[in-house]
Amino acid sequence: DTWWFCFFYSITFGGFLAFVSYLAIFFNTAYGVDKVSVGVLVAIASIFGSVLRPIGGLIADRFGGIPVLRVVFVAFAVLAFGIALAPPLAIGKFLVFAAVGCLGAGNGAVFQIVPQRFGKEIGIVTGIVGAAGGIGGFYLPNLLGILRAASGTFSSGFITFGILALVGALLITLRGRVWSGTFLLGRPTSYAFAIEEG
Image (cartoon, rainbow, N blue to C red):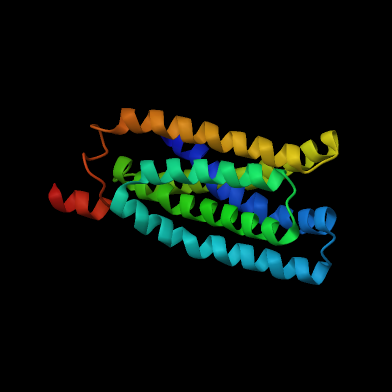
């Protein structure tokens, strides 16, 4: 289960880091945005994704981390495919901010599930999962760069990233079925509420 959480978090947090670090190149090269404006766009995207992290956790507390992650992955895939179409700058900025926001919300959703599975090992497991997110933040932007170099366009990287998110949506759905009835309660709840109910 730790490996599964690492995989899901490498997509959400790794993807968040990848997008933020890759945006400067993307906006400057694909749209010709000057470096000062690019810095502002990257800062806005970073703040937006960070703010949505606790909101994603709050929603996951109410509806459950599994369904929230599934929606996040599917929504991100749609947004990534939209970015791959190279829309006008105004639309492109909206899609990018929304995509980063989805990943931020997904970060919170992952850590709504982890304590339910590892209540006694929460410190070490969150450390391992967090490390996996950092690793994802390293390999995903490199993957985007490699695909751009190979194809000559940014589209291939965003399409691949979108496909990865769809794989994540499928796998979180399958794992959710396995986890339901074991450590996941029958109704969405936070870990604190689960402890209270005994």
